[in-house]
Image 1 (cartoon, rainbow, N blue to C red):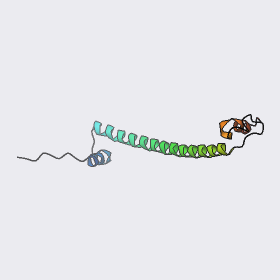
Image 2: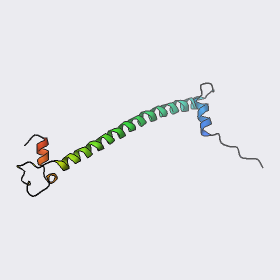
Image 3: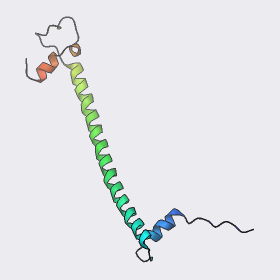
Image 4: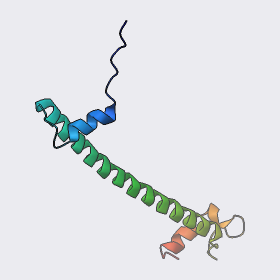
Length: 101
């Protein structure tokens, strides 16, 4: 009984397809161009993802900073809730931030 033929490893196939010295048929040239196109796209998408994650981290930090500022915001002395409520239960801090006081 003979042993079954082993499949060529993917890395070896890719090396053959991407090699400039290996002769190729039309399908292999297409596969070579497709591999290059997909690698380029993967690089672009990876960079975009890294930039998006960095923006998200900055936004989370800014949100935390703003939340802390809201929690520490004093009541406007003319706020109707001044005597009965913490500052973050009303919107006097918003009006102050918008210059409406």
